[in-house]
Image (cartoon, rainbow, N blue to C red; front, top):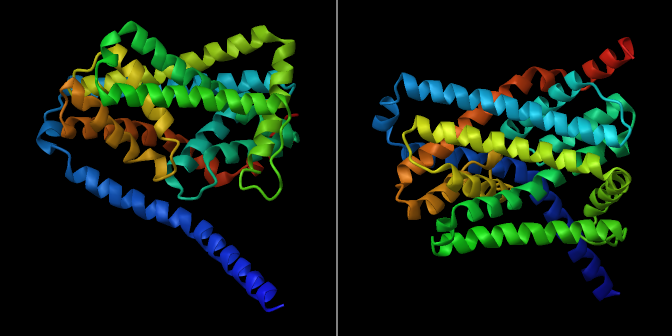
Length: 337
């Protein structure tokens, strides 16, 4: 009995510790983001920044506009997924949901990301919770399929990207691991695999159910799936184009083929939930990957921070939608069914 009591006590302590860590994690991310921001800002060469002229600011404006176009393209992709799932949606509502999700992802330390907000709020509006979750999962899945494919395209168009030593190896490993992980996830979804309730991976059960449901719809209409992949490619092209404008604004010479390799690779790395908005992960990866191309640390950090600032500025459009929540969208749907 004594051993059973001790085992139960240890289990309770372990549960409390895990709960405490889970609650503290968002605040730790917030603190780590502030520290990382301070460290990165101290590495910036402000003399170079002050030399950005009218042409540089024009290029930054172009990057911002292309970023907004990319957001619109991503909403079209999401709209096409919802159409395949027979969920009625309005483009205006999806724009607001997308921007609200971006704002949450870039400003809030919570582990509840923008995708969760999009799925939950859309479920409140459409009264189709499971299909709303499935739409967000499938929309993200197409993006993760396109990212490694773009890396392979960039490497094929510029074989010199394979001659960067350990950096080239890291890039190819990241692309390969992503493709394998996607294949395994999709395969398990098709087989309708379910993790045990006690497993720490049980949260993936809902994701795989959503993938299985969506893939079933797309098997009936493969042409629509190909269109969806096309929209995913177009979105990533917008992301790369915005990066090209940002690099040019800072007079950083990076070939567009190289950016077709680097930008998707960094996007795959930014999934690590270390800081808010991937701050530090993006800049660190740029310092590492641009060094073999002859670009010093300071310009690489400035490039990453400029891309981050452009995304932050774009996500500010989602602040009003986030502040008002989903109730306004529900009321609008009720007033105009």
